[in-house]
Amino acid sequence: MTSCRLCGAPVEVFLDFGPMPLANGFLAGEDFETEGFFDLSVAFCMHCAAVQLTNPVPREKMFHSRYPFFTGSSTRMAEHFRAFAASVADDLRSEDPFVVEIGSNDGTLLRFFANSSVRHLGIDPSANVAAAASENGVRTAIAYFDPPFAAEVVRTQGQADVILAANCFCHIPDLHRLAEAVNILLKPGGRLIFEDPYLGDILRLNSYDQIYDEHVFYFSLTSVSRWLDACGFEVIDVQKQPVHGGSMRYTCARRGACRVSGAVADLRAREVCEGLHLPETYAQFRLRVERSREELSDVLVKLRQRGLRVAGYGATSKSTTVLNYCGIGPSLLEFISDTTPLKQGTFSPGMHIPILPPASFHSAFPDCALLFAWNHADEILAKEGAFRASGGKWIRYVPRVSLV
Ligand code: TMP
Image 1 (spheres, rainbow, N blue to C red):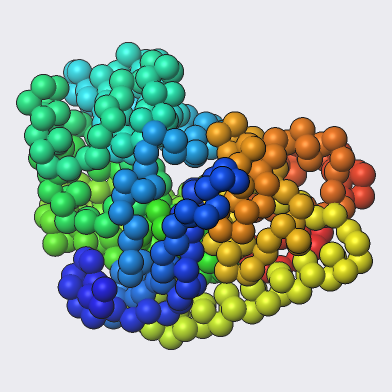
Image 2 (image 1 turned 180 degrees about the vertical axis):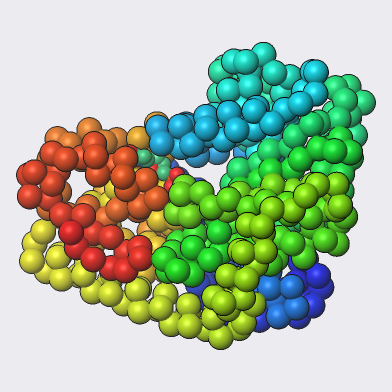
């Protein structure tokens, strides 16, 4: 692709990771031979400032009945979504409100509404996470959200007061079709509230591991505003969120329907100061990413040369980018510990490092642990005090490579 998915203008590739496996393609040993790879490269649009993948993977390869990510696997995330739901509930004004979440995963966010008997509907294409939501009492449809599906919901259940999405819109390649579906489903005075990893934080933290197949877009207020503007909507508020390594929550409404908060102008001005609209910002980011790769490989090779045991902590989707881009395989990393039952007993995509349950980590602490789930660092460091007490060291690579 040489043109922007949002505005059609030419785009400039600033980072090409080369062939990559699916970020969540955890696999069995017998599937190594047939594992698929695709080209992961990311580009910047000079016209609308949208940062995007050039070569999205077909969605059915990523979202299916064995999707291995469950939102509720982190207690901090569950708490974050409880607070998010409570703030939305506070603003519901109609007599019989209807709340819809797009990409509702295991129902962690909607559970709050289900427990308060608020009419709700979760929509998710991955059957296994949707089943987990239904078991939690969250009404869930297994589907992709598109205009025909939105029309069917309106016909059977009416329009929504609020449409929510968390870590979902950045996965959707056709944002104009998405806005068309939102326009059908949302009441005239309704709100669209979504949050996704924030481009400003990715640049600031050098968190290049946020770049993987599922994340088609890396949003800023600038690009979100241009997208919504073309669809008759506008951002009326923004709130920074401390989750997923730095996210932004965008509250949106039909253009002119609501007062726009001062936070929107403030963030817009900050994005100009930080050069989010300038190609040189991305050229500099690329140099920092390349340096980070050299430093991390160097640290791991030296630890192995000293005969130390190193394991990974958290088989995150992000870890797939780091492992494959930096060429880190089983000779450098013995295993990766992860709490997700579906990932345990499999191998990491591309580099084929064994994924083991936390019991393997606790029964014989390695000398060092590479923290892939760095976005959950507070929660993990708090509960893994015994690892530090045993002399274990954490290896971090965000914002820079360090051994603590
Ligand atoms: P995420 O970065 O996409 O939220 O994924 C976090 C991954 O890390 C997920 O596979 C669960 C795993 N994890 C652990 O193994 N231990 C933990 O304490 C936490 C919080 C997450």
